[in-house]
Image (cartoon, rainbow, N blue to C red; front, side):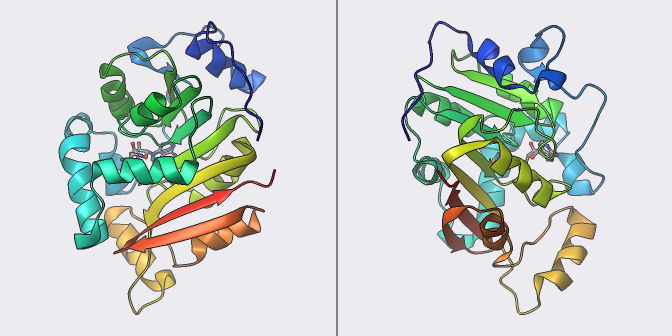
Length: 259
Ligand SMILES: C[S@@+](CC[C@H](N)C(=O)[O-])C[C@H]1O[C@@H](n2cnc3c(N)ncnc32)[C@H](O)[C@@H]1O
């Protein structure tokens, strides 16, 4: 895809505002607390305990160093890639280049968004999450000229169609209330030839996901996706070049939007 040239003089926040659907644009662009809050009193997080946990200040503080590496090990077992390897995998799946516009969907405390901002140094990275606690920690890592954090809902993205060259959604689809709606939104905001990278749960047991997922979800908030559920959902939304890599109880999935 020919890369769009973007004037570096336009501040990242202005570039982000220009990507918003006009009706969703705030009257005043205030990034109080280091992020642009487009949700206000709304909370799309869901009511299950695992979902509510994402709003905890304490979890946000220990997430990157403790919770995420431990969670990754639990989900992926002994073959779990370390943090650096996961960054490398995400960059590879997204084929990230220096001028890309990237959306890190459900970015948590920015543990991937910061890496994307380093690589897409001439582009723009938007980290979107619903949790004020996570975003507050993300913002505390300091400003970067090409990185903006937005508080929004993955199931109703505020961006115009085809806004991003790459969309990453790691370790979040299984917590999002309506993951297939979020997939619709990912595909909508992805530019033609854009790439998507997902990390989600994957059913590996003898019982079908249709049986295990509701039980696991009721106690933890985590949804277990059937082995072909996400690849099938991407295919049915017209994406191509779909690749799946299963590690333990997790799956990395990448795909491309038709040029
Ligand atoms: C486990 S964290 C993942 C963070 C990061 N992507 C990673 O790979 O470590 C899941 C994130 O999903 C966010 N989340 C859950 N539902 C959401 C929604 N509807 N819209 C936006 N973010 C949501 C939570 O607030 C949380 O920060």
